[in-house]
Length: 294
Image (tube, rainbow, N blue to C red; front, side, top):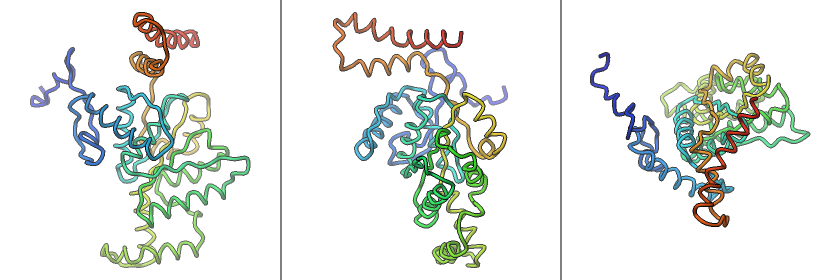
């Protein structure tokens, strides 16, 4: 009655319902057209091709792209293609947050950057890594995804810088004065070309706007324990300035498809025996989860 022209029936039909999923890779990743997908099979084919291309030039990811995983990729792509778009992926370890983020970054043509934690990694090392990302995103105009997991936050002070990056992109004490001068000089011509008066403040604001356009943070956090709640309370931009994507427990059909793929190369006897073993895997996984809760 409220929206008489909106064809809701086809999305909520008990059989053959159309998938209510919109993404930027309806036909292929080369043509980023944002539209509704017509079938999950087509979406799967496009993402399988993208994964194949990714594996040709990067460390191989052996992923099973079941329906939930494909929807997460669509969400992450949609988030990071927006100016100032940052993602907060919340799910237990092993749910695919990092792998799907890497695939989403590849689809967008972004470079993935992760910090390498060691016993000597300090605030200054983080600042150096952030500077490198800022130069790449702000001066070279390259798309960058900063992929950060909760296990990499070895010092809670790291989150002061992440909080500023998420909220405005302007981290107050990141650059020294001479470094700011060098950045201002580098962007002056682009500021003039944009029709802006090339004053120092305008040049810096232009640089920060390029950062917000090209540098996107993807946080992969676990909801287990108190850390997530405490960090969200102390550093509100973690929640307020990100789009949250919750990774729910894998559905039974996803567990089945993953188990089936990894048993593919193993001799399990007859087809009947193979079928029974494949169907046992999701059952055993769910039974262990149920017993764990109890």
